[in-house]
Amino acid sequence: MSDKLQQRNGLDFAVADLSLASFGRHQMRLAEHEMPGLMSLRKEYEGQFPLRGARVAGSLHMTIQTAVLIETLVALGADVRWVSCNIFSTQDEAAAAIVVGPEGTVEAPTGTPVFAWKGETLEEYWWCTEQLFNFADGQGPNMILDDGGDATLLVHKGVEFEAAGAVPQATPEDHHEYTIILDTLRRSLASDPQRFTRIAADTRGVTEETTTGVARLYKLAKEGALLFPAINVNDAVTKSKFDNKYGIRHSLVDGLNRATDVMLGGKLAVVCGYGDVGKGSAETLRGQGARVVVTEIDPICALQAAMDGMQVVRIEDVVSEADIFITTTGGQDIITPEHMAAMKHNAIVGNVGHFDDEIDMAGLAKVPGIEKVEVKPQVHEWRFPDGHAVLVLSEGRLMNLGNATGHPSFVMSNSFTNQVMAQIELWTKPGEYEKQVFVLPKHLDEKVARLHLDALGVRLTELTKKQAEYLGVAVEGPYKPDHYRY
Ligand code: NAI
Image 1 (cartoon, rainbow, N blue to C red):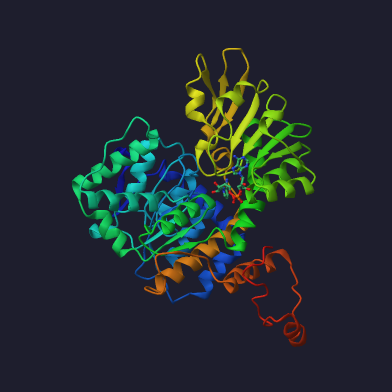
Image 2 (cartoon, rainbow, N blue to C red):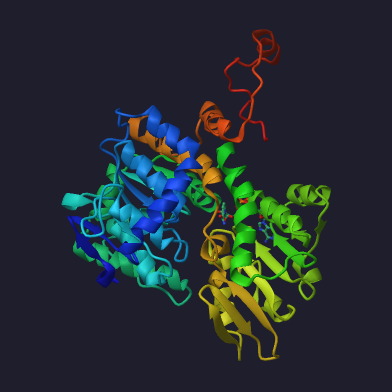
């Protein structure tokens, strides 16, 4: 793993190929034009550097859009190190462009340290995540920007084991990935027994991008175990009601097309989960002319799906008829080896929930006589002994990022504008937030939306003073109470 580690011009990094930087830079230029929220924050804070002194450890898909986020954090004064939060989601040209930087060259890079490449092993993934914590002069980070909570998890587990003075041995029941995390922390403890304890004490907070990471944070807070304040970026309206829904509406079909190029019209598609991501997934598949059915456990979301005109079924009802299965639940074991054994020949199985255990890939590999054939990277044919096969995308991991390049810039500008504002909030107000999970105030949510209106030619109606008084709101907002659901 460390053979990927390079040092050039005083910068450490580990990426696939630095010579891809100019390809990445061209794409970033186009992305910047599509990211008005981030670009206007750069303008608003020009010369002020609100993040000066912040050492931000970022773990979030290393895409072109994230590259624009990173350079926004840097423009606002932050010192940044970055990894991807998924083994397949890195765009190698984006990683290269960020290391080289806007002013640097491949020979003399002057950008930001990145440790990420497309197609990491799990061991490499956790090695990369560990590199996040090695800022210059032996310092650790003092801010975390997380997607899914892996960087936060490493700090919390690190502190727990440092307090105990030892890292436990993995048990046979432990997930393979957890044994790698334990190995990573064992190495860390041996070289510096107080490393994560210091990092946790220095960290002013974490801003978390996604539903799954946020769920982990609320769990820690409930147990009284959260070590620093957290801002739940996901539940900003301009994040989850846009990125999760409209973003997947773009990138799910993009991933299916790039992976399989199969005609979607007329096919029977099953969307498991009808939350924000499920709603966008169902809509986009329907837009392609697929016949979409939905599975749900929540009666409210099930009723929404039914009222949106989709049949709500149990997976067993359709498993042998459906052509495409997409999981969007953030849960576990949604598609089992038994389901896949009963599927049609060449049924497509993909997951867009955060972790890979929505599809029981470990169980699939254990089916007696099963054969795995690589069609191309991130597309595998799993041949059952009876002769039928299923096509599994991105090994069960986020296929919209593994088989395509994730959500487009415009929608990510909404998410990332929230991220930057959340970083500024926690960094500039030390001591004002307790070790709990917070959401950004509504006026900032409305600000994010406002920053994206001009680009779409939106002409917003302005309230008169009389109308505002009648509604009981201020002319300049916020316009809705916190309990409003959009
Ligand atoms: P959500 O909570 O709004 O939706 C999940 C839905 O799945 C809920 O309605 C829940 O009732 C349902 N569900 C749970 N267990 C189920 C089961 N066994 N069978 C059927 N339905 C079940 O969450 P959201 O925001 O839609 O996120 C879902 C996942 O997608 C999370 O893991 C999140 O981190 C991830 N995500 C992925 C993105 C991507 O680019 N691929 C973007 C944003 C979020």
